[in-house]
Length: 126
Image: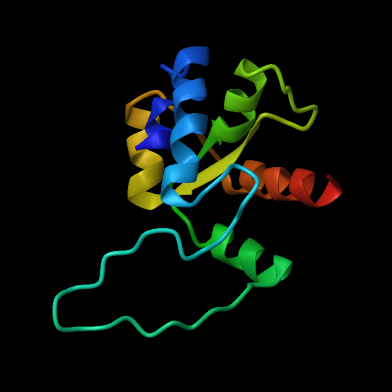
């Protein structure tokens, strides 16, 4: 739900969100995968942690039909809180149905595979 606030994010929301995070065990500086998950009743999900290589990610991007790029809501929020980031702002990628949702709701814009690969290159370059 947080990411869908891109177009309505303001300082008040950002302050309230930051105040809320510790109550669920998160801060913007943490990047733990475990956060909150739903496990279907009487079943389990087998964890298979893996980090894809940069080249594998590029292959996955090349397979996408719909790709969107959005401003980084974390960077936008921190800027509203007086902690601006000097890194590129439009760096979050969406694929498939999620990309279409972002495009349809004017949260992001559609980009080509080549443009998405350029965003990945920006991320590597820092």
